[in-house]
Picture 1: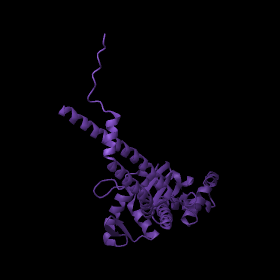
Picture 2: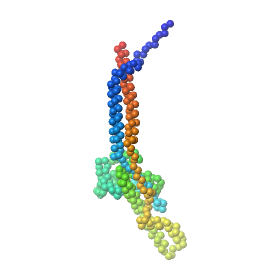
Picture 3: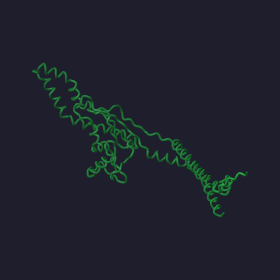
Picture 4: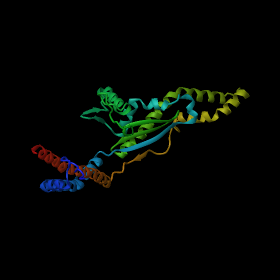
Length: 296
């Protein structure tokens, strides 16, 4: 008994057909491969260097200071009072001026920080860009929160971290020192009436020969507060404390990092191109088989 032969699938692609198509389009495959390889080699030496130089030109350093209200003065301030003070654009403008900035550039616009006629405009721009991190059209000025020009992070009810970014390290340092001085001046003026009243009352009772024993015990209890407030009024100490010096951090920019990224992208593109080159003759073979079937 003869076994019936299995019908041959005319749509099946044989390796011979695939090889034939590869040989036929070998010039195209080789040309694309060589051209891509040349571009990859040129790009390896040119594109990472371009990205590296651009990163150097756009590099910003970040400065950080830690500010706190001294314990003796904390009783006169609400929680996060430092945050409210540092949200004032006039303090930022004065700090920029003391650090040496006469004009503030926003995109193609320049506003003077020294001209009284442009004071309102300068305050508005600083409020939008520094404090709110917004453009004039309402979009975010910088989308990454950590890359904002100016940031205040509350660490406790009476302490904050302040961050500032700029291209010049020395300007960042001068600005942070000026900002601390401005903030301390505002905080001092806020409790100055109480300090003056407390110091005057203390000295009046201290010099009064008829002071009672109970009052002398109160004077003894408040002696450290008296010394502290008197020192502030005389300029010997400050309401606020800056812990340590400003910390300036410069980003590490390495050419090798850009080249490594380029190689990684090149490998991904290589596999993508390989898949394309493999699928091209396959599709051509399928097309040839389909045409042959139609002719039959």
